[in-house]
Length: 281
Image (cartoon, rainbow, N blue to C red; front, side, top):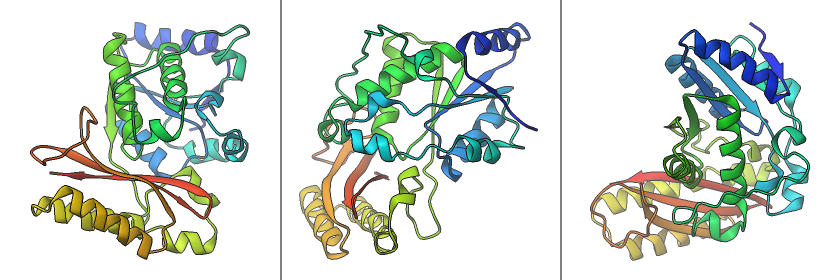
């Protein structure tokens, strides 16, 4: 089955309206393309839960605080469509820039609280860009449910907060991080790792696993975090941008482990920024 590629919101709305009249449940998987097995796992989850599935492909300029990062982001629509072939995706929505940000676009959505600290502190304006484009895509697709990966855990909490606060009638489903056999979390950025950096990258997850085990065994949070940073340095992982333990729902810093938490990390390895996280508690 070859998915229909639509570029205009009017076309998409017309198709979705027909599905809704038929009482069908519509799911969306928002992406920026450069699809990998992690994205495809979201499509599989959407197919399992919904009657109709839309995959969006839009490289959102508003969520890149670094113009060089935007320039380097891979744009692979043709190969993305090939990867989706046969998965039962009904529509690939790949809008042109004016469909998302028409001339004179002047609205910015900012989600406070869960967007603060972590990536929010190191990528100014990033989550405003995420919240704005996700809001647009949810409204344009009219989806009943949207699927996001837990690898971008702070982003997932921002989207959940956005939908609750603005009463958008769409369920947000977080899906487990998909990893390479050696533990490296799948990311579109991984293709930018050179051989040496790629060989070191699995150490990120190994260090997170060791830290989670120590915390679950009653380790002192400050001590465990300090040791884990030292372990990352010893593994030549690169610059540790942050390593923090946060509450799984509020993303507030955790000083005493009493419920579900997330250990989150960001590193710069060989000039590539990588993030990962692991459940604790």
